Image (cartoon, rainbow, N blue to C red; front, side, top):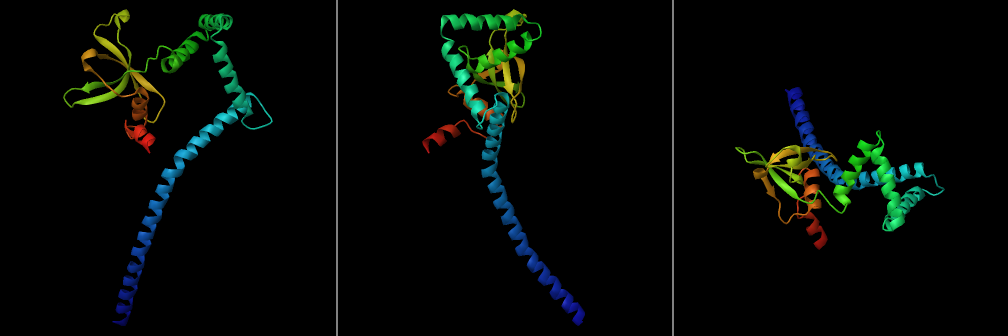
Length: 214
């Protein structure tokens, strides 16, 4: 009888100790996840930035860390400034023509040039965010960017080209869709739409504006 009573008391004492430990563990896990949420974005950003600096330094070795990146950025800035001069423009046009004619570099060079031009050139292509109806019965839409509104040169009529970026990735797919399935996102900036898609819908369209107000 005494042995059973001792065993029962020991069990109650064990479970009474287990509950506080469980609460403490839950609290610690909450604190850890909150700390991870605050530290991870900054840490990853710094890691990527440091990686870029090291890569630049490996291309142009310097005595001081970051000197290579400064030299590269300065070189790019100087090229941008002199690109407006007639002489330099002829040189750039000659280099552009040379790259476009070379069989090994033509495809890579033209693709990269068009991609950068689409985002930063005078004729920006990713400036019209749209919603595309994919499944009519379910009413499911997908957000993308209208890149070509006329596909007649491919023998395709009443169709448009829409680029769909992937979430949490810097890649995407190009779809040819019917014009009637396109719904322009009026009043939505291209940068906000891209950030919304890449973040998997976590970042809202108004998050940047709210942050600026604060």
